[in-house]
Length: 317
Image (cartoon, rainbow, N blue to C red; front, top):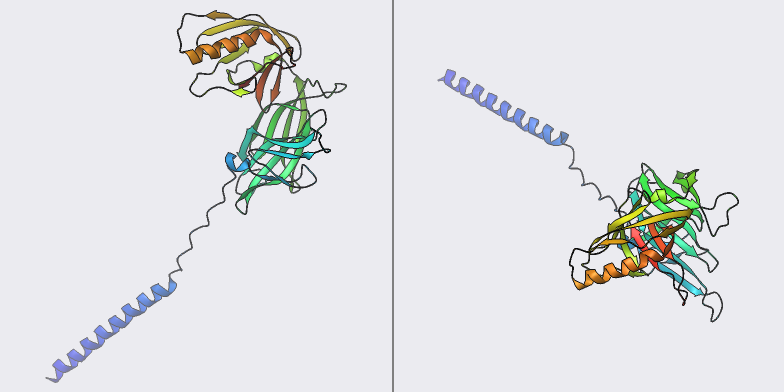
């Protein structure tokens, strides 16, 4: 009887010790477990194109201004005067990337500043969201009456091929092709590269199917197929809106060209809207006597008519 009691007591003590060991292990595990990490904060997004249209811009005028529908228009320079300061967001140039080396990415775009003089000054502006609104965080001047042929973001810089006035050239009629690069330097946006690479030439337009987006300041109607232009080897060819066309082109000097009347393959039948678009486009082509660039787009222009209105065809890539 005593042996049984002794063995029971021993067994009870073993069970109790095992229970205490398990409790201690669980307690130790709970104590060692790290607290649950808080979810990472969402990274702010750069401004959208729609937000840039109502952005606040400082650094290009003495005071900061706010755009409305991509444009700011100041008060007349004098009572009753037509001249006034304007700032226009060049929407086709909007690019996204990390300029300052710290997340999030910025939105970069060109703005044209016209203070009522004979030309406009381009500025590159970096935008970020501040208190829920698109705001300019850095600016850098690009130049007076500079024509931007193309712009792109690569690594941590905004690169541009531009046409600007070269040595001895008047500001009105630039022909020097220059490659520029803008990046972060000493806490601000600055010109990092500025290298002349040649002269403006119609050869710059080659190997690109240019697509018509505006004719005489009016956007194309919805639902129509836009005319195109491939300009190379002394020819302009493409789709006219309904049929294919071909015309000879000659460049007499940088920026000055002449087009022959186009030859059209008129075998295709189209609806009335396409036929009307084609007729207007083909009527414009023989009037073209010059080309230039604006915000990465190609402009083919003609001589002013009797009312001083210049025909203009605007193409994008």
